Each structure stands twice: as C-alpha cells, then as structure tokens.
Amino acid sequence: MTMIGPENADQARLLRLLRDDGPRSRVELTDALGLPRGRFGAEVDRLAAQGLVEAAGPAASRGGRRSSLLRIAEQVRFGAVIVGEGRLDVALTDGELSVLARHTEPVDVRLGPEPVVSHAVELLAKLRAEAGLARLTGVGVALPAPVSVRDGAPVSPPALPGWHQFPVRDTIAAELGCPVQVDNDANVMALGEHHAGTGRAFDDFLYVKLGNAVGCGLVLGGALYRGATSGAGDIGHLQLTEDGPLCVCGNTGCVEAYCGHAALVREAVTAARAGHSTALGDRLTAAGTLTIDDVAAAATGGDTTAQTLVRDSARRLGQVLVDLVSFVNPAIVIIGGAPPGVGPVLLAEIRGVVYRRSTPLATGAMPIVLSDLGDRAALVGAARLISDQVFAAR
Image 1: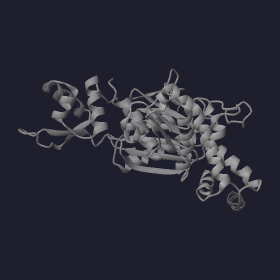
Image 2 (image 1 turned 30 degrees about the horizontal axis):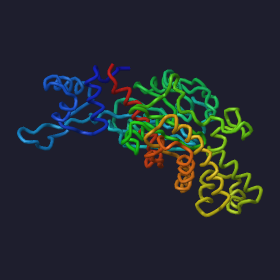
Image 3 (image 1 turned 30 degrees about the vertical axis):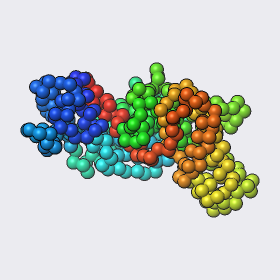
Image 4 (image 1 turned 135 degrees about the vertical axis):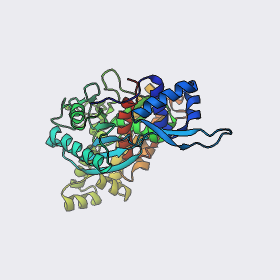
C-alpha cells in the first residue's frame, strides 16, 4: 500500500484548512499558516505532486495581482461504512467530506463479520468504479459496538455477536489497498456533528446517540476524546437500578435496558398484550411484532401509553445526563437517533430533568438540542475519521 499524506505539520494544517473551510486563496492560506511565501509555495507543490491539492481558479481581487484558489484535489475520495441496526450504509465523499454517492440496504449482523464486511467492500468497490477512481484515499468505518481503535476491531460487542476482535480495519485495508480507520458509531457521529452540524460552533460538547444501543461521543478541546483504551462515552451500560430489566451485556438495570429502542419496543409489546393501548395492540395483531417506528407513530398519534413510554425513557436518560453535564461541563448537548416524530417530546423531558437537577454553573447557558444532520452524521463522521488520519503528518 503506497502511503500518501502530508510530510510535516504545515502541510497537515493546510489540508485540514481546505477540508474544513473549502477552497481558499493562496494569500489567505499563507496568512493563516504564517509561512513565508516561498516556503508555502514549496509545500503546496509537494502536496500537488501527491495529488492532494490543486488549483481552483482565480480568487476574488483584494487589489493588485489576483491570487489563485487552492482546494483539495478532485481525486481525493473517502469511503464511509456504517454498520447499523439492521442496515448497511456505504457512501463516497469528496475531500471536503460532502456525500457524493450512497447505498443503503438491510443487513443481518448476526450472520457474522465475514459476509457483512465482505459485502461492504463490494459496495465500496462498486461506488469507486462508478466514480472512475483507481483507488480510494481512505475508508472510515462505524460499528455499533465498543471498538479498540488501536487494533481496528470490536471488543466484546453485545450488538454484534461473533464479531469479537474481528480485524475489520485490516480486512478492508487489504481488500481495497488504502488506509482504514474504525471506531464506534457514537464517536463517529460526534465527529460528523463537529464537522458539519450544530457541533461545528463548539469545542466542547456531548453527542448522545440513541438506538438499540445507547452511546455518547465526547468532543473536548476541539478533539474527539476516546480515553486510555477507546472506552470513553460508553454510557449505555451505566447502571440506573440494581433490580431493573436484563441488558444485552448481561447486567441488569443499564441505561440501554431502559432507554434503548429495543427496550421501548419490549415495553410497548407488553403494554399491547395487556390491552393498555389500542393503537399498539392493533398494530401488533396486524404485523405480529412492533418496531420503534410503530411506538413513535402511536405516541405522535396521541396514544397515551406510547407517550408515557417515551417520556419515562427520556427522564431516565436525563438522569444520566445530569451526572455527565456536571462532570464534563460541555457547552452543548446534541442528541441524535431520536425515533421519528417524538424528538420534541423526548427533548422536553430531558431538558426538564437536566435543568432542574444540574448546577447553575454547569447548565447556565448550555443548550440541549436535537441533531439536524440525521443519519448523515455517521457518513460525514466516518469520512472525517479517516481524513484525520490521512491528513496527519507522517
């Protein structure tokens, strides 16, 4: 595998400026980097020789001779792979991390890592061929699981049975011949928010990811915080009660066992069978099962049982956020993955708990908001994940 990328810190800063802010003039970039003009030109030439930057036409006149624009080269293309809860999402982005092409299809992760990862590679190769690319610049992968970033593999993942320590990174890298980086989905979504969402305006924030699995990505000091062994933010298995429902991790009373989508569906099925909800009961009879979308539809349709389930789940999540906010003191909390239509209700309950129970110093000016990126957060974040590696000085 031929490695490309910046040879020094100045080249790395230049690439990240162009990735984050788009095309900029040579004059602006020279000023931003604080480099002598000759040195700046030499660094640009070296990056251009690797096919990482290119000219993008003349810049707006600032008086005198017009400067030229620079941008990330058109041939720089990142792949994104999101292994989700029941679906596989694969995308291609440009060097500024805008999604250019995307393919989504159902997937059963219980089949094991080999067929799922192999199919993801096939889809990436198809997107690459359709774009006329000889190779991808890099691939970022998000898994709904604890991940050892150093090893590029999931670790004892409750949501991915049979995936423990499977070399996801090395398998994809060997097939596609490019750098690959793997992380858990909450971290990846936090990166997506930091690049293109509400989190772009903040250096310190929490991104809470809802779903069957519940997780949290921490951006602190402008960078993703993973902890000593990539385990930071695993809030799904904090224990709320000792005698609560059994969690997929084997313990009882975990946040995920109360607040995860699968937990909401479980409670909804119980309520429907007990005759507490006509809407949920009718749906269960017709389909034989319930989904999180069914619960959300019943709640938004005025079903009081479904609304109570959503509010109870949100209040428990709020209890966890009280501790996190007091400990981390973020500038904002962003919540992603809310079931369709129930975001406002969920948000109101969480805010009520957090603002009532947290200290004024921690929450005085701290908003709690829903993500405006939706599922794009993961795709952009996966591209950001690998671009951070490719655009780092060798």
